[in-house]
Structure formats: C-alpha cells, structure tokens
Amino acid sequence: MKKKNTPPAGGLRGKQSTVSRREFLNNSFKTALGTSIALGFPSIVPASVFGKNAPSNRINIGAIGTGRISRIHDMPGVWQYDYAQITAVCDLDSNRAEDGKKLVNEYYTKREGKPFDGVKVYTDYRELLQNKDIDAVLISTPDHTHAMIGVVAARAGKHTYMQKPASLTIGEGRIISDVVQKSGVKFQIGSQQRSSEQFRYAAELVRNGRIGDLKTVYVGLPGDPPGGDKTKMPVPPALNYDMWLASTPEVYYTEDRVHPQVGYGRPGWLRCEQFGAGMITGWGAHHIDSAHWGMGMERSGPVEIWSNKAEFAVEGLWDVHGIFTTEALYANGVKMVVSNELPNGIKFEGTKGWIFVSRGDYQVTSSDPGGGTTQAKKIDASDPKILTSVIGEKEFHFEISKEHHGNWLEAIRDNKNPIAPVEEAHRACSACLLHHIAMKLKRKIYWNPAKEEFKNDKEATAMLSRPQREPYSVKA
Image (tube, rainbow, N blue to C red):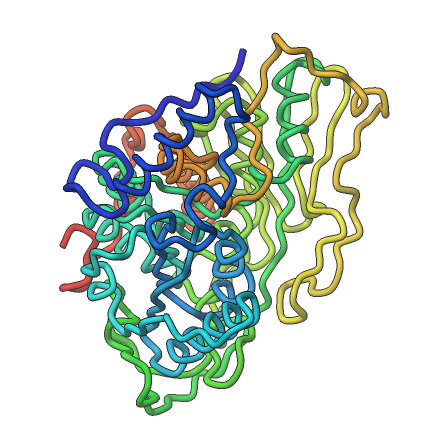
C-alpha cells in the first residue's frame, strides 16, 4: 500500500492565479514531456529542450530572511538546481540583505563563469511578495514570524518552503494550514529528515511490523544553556526592530535577544520564549515528525500529555526550557517519551525488538548545543536482521525524496504534493507545543486531536494562542 500523492486543485500558483509566466513554464514542460512519451523517449526532459537557463523554464525564488540558516542551508538548497533561480532577497536587517545579495551573486558568477548581478534587494517581505515575477519563496526567519509570513505568501499565490517549526502557537498553526490548503500553493516545511533515507526506512520498518507491535517511542533532543546579556542597547540603524518583533510585545533591544551584528553565529532569539519554545520545537519539530511517520500519526496527535521534569532559567535573558522529560499517550496506545537526557534521535520499541535512528555523524556548528559531531549510528536495531529486511512491493512505502529542497521544486514543476505538506507540519508542531504546555503547567493535560481542543481545561486552552500586536497579527 503506497501513500498516495494526489495534487490539489489550483494549479502551480493556486486559485488566485491568472495566466502567467509560471503557467507558461508548466504548460511548456508538459507539452515537451508528452511529446517525449509519444515518441517513445524517456520521460525525463533534458535542459536542452528549453535551453539550460531559458527564463521561461525557471522557477524564480525570493529568499525571505538571509541569516545563518538561509546562508548555509536554504539558499544553497535551491540554487543547486538549474531550473530554479534566486532573483530576490529580503531581510529586516539591511546589512544582512546586502550580504545575501552578495552571496547569491557570487555563487551565480562562479557557476556561470561570468559576472552576475541579477538579485533584487528588499527590506520588507510584503513588497517582495507583491513582485509578480517571483514564483516561490524561502521563509528562513525567526520562529515567531513563520506563520505570519507564510499566510501572506500563500494569499499572494507564492509556493513556499518554510523553516520549521510551523508556528509559535497551535492556533497560528491551524490558520496557516487552512490558508495554505485553500490557496493550492506547494508548501514544504523544512523537516528535511523526511528526505533522509535512514529516517524513511526506519519508519517503513516500524509501519510494516518488523519490531512487532509498537509500544513506546523515545525522542532524544539537544538542550539549551541559560545565559544572555540583558544590557539595553540602541537599535542598530540597519535593523527594522519594530517589524522584527512582529506580533510579540514591545521590549527593549539587546543584541543577545536578536542576532549577532557581526557574523552569522547562532542567534539569541532561539533561546527566548517570546520568539519560540526552545529545543522542544527546535529539534522536536524534526524528531517528533519522524516519530509520527513511524507511528502512522502524521495527521493526528497525542490524547494525554504530562511532564515528569522541566527546568526553566530564572536569571539571564535566555529563558527557554532546560533539562526536561515529558510523556504522551496516543489513541492507539503507543506512548512517547521526550527528553534532552536521552540520546539525540528516535528509538521505536516494539514487542519484537527496537530500532534507533538519528543523523549519525552530523556536524553542527560550534555554537549549537552539543556542538561538534554526534557519534550515534544513523540507524541501529536490536537484531541486525531487522535492518536487512526487504520491504515487499505490496507492503507500506513512503514516497522517496532524495533532497528536501529539490523535492519542493519538483512539486512546483510537476504539480504534485511535496514530501512534508503543511497539515503534517502543523500536526508535528502541535505535538511539540503540547509537550511545552505540559512543561509549563506541570500536570497532565487531555487533548482531542480531531477537534484540536483540551478537555475541560481553561488554563491549557488559554495557551493555544497568544495576544498579537497589530499590525503584525497572523489574522491581519
């Protein structure tokens, strides 16, 4: 039984589109594809059919947010493909925006062997989204702005690759999922583990019963140390700090609250609850998403969640959770344990054995928690025979994605669903946020994943959303 991949209605630019250069691109590609099949040629059309860099054959991309993750992951993730081109960059820090332009221009200059200066610079994402020549966007901004920008991008008809987590609150997540699905644009969340062979294979082995009946899933995450300089500082002239704060409350500027003014080291906002939930969403959005794959819970969530341990910093600027252990029960009886005292990765434990999967020798930056190299195996099992098991043609298989950004671009080009769609992104993020709520309340909470509501719990219900500062609210 294969997971179906049925394209939604709306075409390449969604329901709001009119005839455009993007539609001409798609129609031209389909015409050439159909001709090749009719003549008995392979269905893969070489770039020479259109010309390698023919403008009508490109997906024009705007990069919103040009900081660390954009520079080392998202922009390189798309510029490696000949049929996609970054034509615009945007950052609320004008220095970073100019750096982004320089980075992209230098890459294309080197690749093409001649000077390139074709990147437009923006400091307001709303202006970039009004550019009708841009087909798709990368959203590589702080967590608290993901849903806000994602909603506007979908309403503008722009295909979207967005860094995880999907939202800051479950309420925001529901809004972005609904808006994106209604728009028909191709949305990919940056859960790149779905495009890693070992995570897909581990989930398939579990789904096909190689460890018997699944009983418990252990999710190990990194941790974040407290700290941060609270000293009030003048806002840098290049930074639109009011827009950077977006829907969150006005607070004074200090560099450790935002991002480094020199270089692209790990930003302080990752460790401030005002802008995110910490590692429970930072890495949890990856690992809980992968756990849901193996559990068959991609579009659901837990029904009971509780906290056994949760430490929060009481001094310093950075106030996300520290050491913690939370647990959750799913309707199918499977229990999940999440902790940063477990090995970084996911362990599926069943009645006939276990499977552990991780990123293996994954090199992280020196400023990340556990910086250096993770020594865990990419995939391991209680019995080596489990890992050599052949999954039959009629057994459960996920679609195969060889590279996450490329999978998104293929979805745009070929009008198909990407490997990490918005509703499943929302569900993985929701599970993370439920564990975070349990940490804060220090008691068991009861959740209805179908209705997305708590059972008789006003205190927990109040944490499904946050007050939002206008004009930056997701609804606005």
